[in-house]
View 1: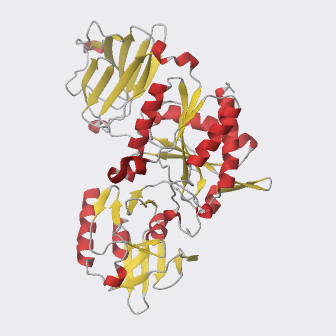
View 2 (view 1 turned 30 degrees about the vertical axis):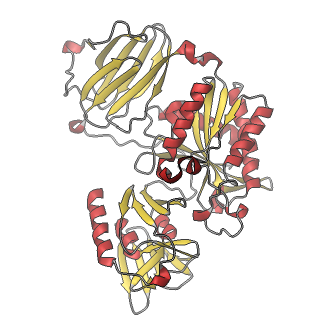
View 3 (view 1 turned 180 degrees about the vertical axis):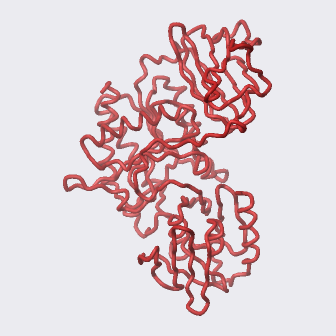
Length: 494
């Protein structure tokens, strides 16, 4: 379906392609992406009064919506089963499901091509819109979740495949400190460590024995035969159909010593890679340090940037979310916590090779480096700010305004429920004293973003959106002080 949509979009773009007058071509060409796929056209998106404008039919057909253009009245209508947007050309407003909404930039027609404000239209049809100022790129991501300010703080429903589509187990390998399990399709494993005896247990729900590894006879356990005798971590690996009703295969690795483990993000949903380390060298018992970092380090706030009126341009090399990280670190350190914070400007570090879409790859390198330098780190916090409206990102509590917290959980991490439990614990401590300060928890898989957010590096890892582009630094700092209290309480065992 996606492939057909992209082809249809490209065809439309070619039909709409015309040469624009020189007077409209002063700005650099803006690139447009839909679900990571680049769309090309000589009728490119453009900046008008700090608003990104995109051809009408490119937006609408990408959404699977209906488009109607009334040349006589100069009115464009975009609609689907639940949403209708009426856009009078050169009008400062749109009519959304019968309600008038103001626009920062009026729809216009240039050489017969109707251009609309991308954020307004796309977000009202359920897309996430991201603007990368460094590369002049607009990315549209499909999502069925409400990111405009409601609270989707419920466990997501993970769709189940019918049994005839279950992936088959293909291989189980243990080489040095890497345990790799592969199937011939996507699967969602669950990993845990048991004691007395020490074992690593991996459950593979919805996986069959119809592949290279066959089911053991009479419900006995199969054994992986090529485990090196000198492997420092694992002495034996067995597997069995643990639950035939859910077709859950259980893999059990007998441990030679107590271990810590790290699930690796391979980018391949058909493969699980677990990196093992000695629990003694990992010093797990004494872990309590905190690491604060920023995958999108230049995110800033409109009120703090003179002349900026649009969240698409609320980015700055010095006035940005790293200031919130510094505030959080300073307060926690004053409370006696061991805290490390990095405020790397990845755009400056990578220069011409910088790609905003690789932000979490860049920050992952920072995490790996910090964990190597400071193995006592237990808690990881990636601090951001959101792009939703001020009304969605601001709470007024006892007469004082605060930037709301919004927790993001990546569903691609097989142990995401541990991150979810941690986020809910932080959220509960915050809202106990400041009701309404949290917008809830937003669950994201690879269809709407990275899907991992580096949360596989610790079960005590959280990506937190602090307010939005319309909030002030003061409002955001007030929230950081409250967040610090909750984190410190957890650190102390509260």
